[in-house]
Length: 235
Image (cartoon, rainbow, N blue to C red; front, side, top):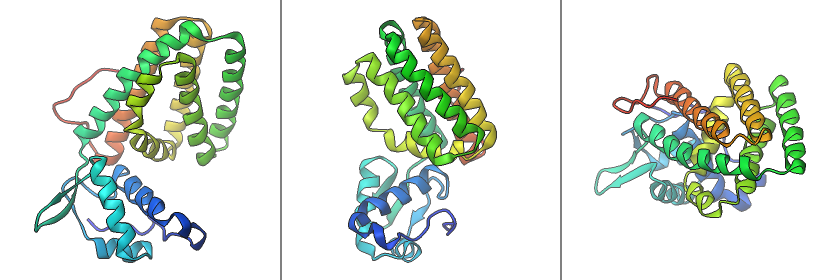
């Protein structure tokens, strides 16, 4: 499958100081968004031409992608995409398990001032949702989940989530580009907040788990056109 040039734009001159990071981010986002299929061979020279860069930052990016588990290198054969529907859903299930526990704990610890702060965040998310402000909404989504992590005080669990932040970020960009997903996600975030504000840990945990699993299934359908085979999991 050829890379759609509308998916990955050339790196602008003002980004040259952090060229390697931007090439890495663009390729990573393209893989998670489904521009490449699982098992597809990546051509470094072709990618470099598409991005308007030399092959050096592309090679660097591929090494990082391999460490993240998104590509594999086979001796004398080349580099291949390693991102399947099953892998995408497994990553989300891991996140759901950790973050739902953090949300349970946060519901027991959230203060009145933090409820007010989160209510303001919800208002901003609603405004961004109504105005289809994708970049703002992605940032607000990450701030929302980050605030729950902070309130929970679960530093160890948060570190366990660090390894897949790249996937979570790319998934949000892909999903929130769809109007129905923006609205559904906002309704779910409202529901999680209501449970937190009511100091209902069991409900907050259940709603967070349901939100993450449903979003993951939507992303799998969006990218792969089908649910992950052999990995049924209810929201």
